[in-house]
Amino acid sequence: MFKRLAVLSLSAGLAGTALAAASAASAQAAPKPRAQAAAADAPPATLDLSDCPDVLPVGADPADWFCNVLVTNAGRMKIGGIDQQITAPMRITLLSGTDPKTGAEISKFVKMRSTAMTVAGGALGIPGTEKIPLFALKVKPQYAGKIDLDIVNRKTRLDLKIKLVNQLLGDTCYVGSGTAPISLDLDLADITPAPGPDGTFWVKINATDDTFAVPKTNGCGFAAPIADLRGGLPSASGANHAQLTSYFGGKQYSEMYPKMAVRTK
Image (cartoon, rainbow, N blue to C red; front, side):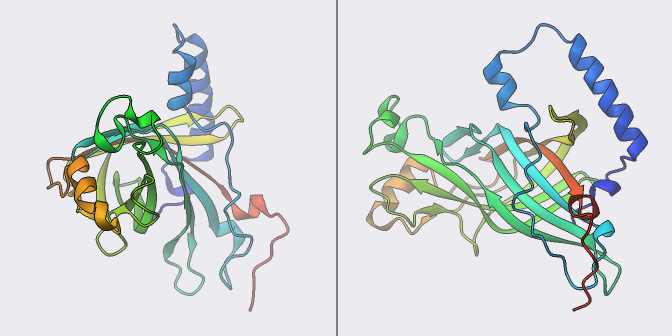
């Protein structure tokens, strides 16, 4: 179950202290990392809540509801024979709050946004061919039906499918699906406060999983055997690896929409 920002064992006082400490540590750190490395693993420049809905369930109190984002912008995933660096951010928007009927904590997936990432070696696994249009291969992670972020217990379940983008594969070629996803059971080994450049309070999460299995491709037509061979698929548990660096942040609805009233119907 998603936990609201207020339940991340981070009170307002603790958050302020953490921000001050982190800012001081950042100012004293030397030498500075290269610009490219810093951009790859740093809090997002802004808190993008553009996918947050502007209405809540009937009876929901805006003071009890949050719109949160989980931005994964660094790390790597080894899926069968492909070892892919995270070179473009993935952003998942979530709603969390108190069920007006039961009083229980509930969560709702809203949207996942990602950008296709170039695979080194392209469709044939030959260095340099990723720059040739016919042989270029990109991967685009997509949501596949489940996310359960539990920061308190340091576990996350995330179901993904990965779209394979290549001229010969068509528009329906995937690894994983809604019925047979790539199911990550991530251990949140490291959770630390991370101030953003715009003052947003983020929580930095380093997560890993070495236990997930990866199915064969689907929807790839006549090219499926080639795609499976290139990807080393299917790939059993223990042969794959995920190491993801993410940033978690959000805002209370009563702060986002000060005039939002409780809906009665």
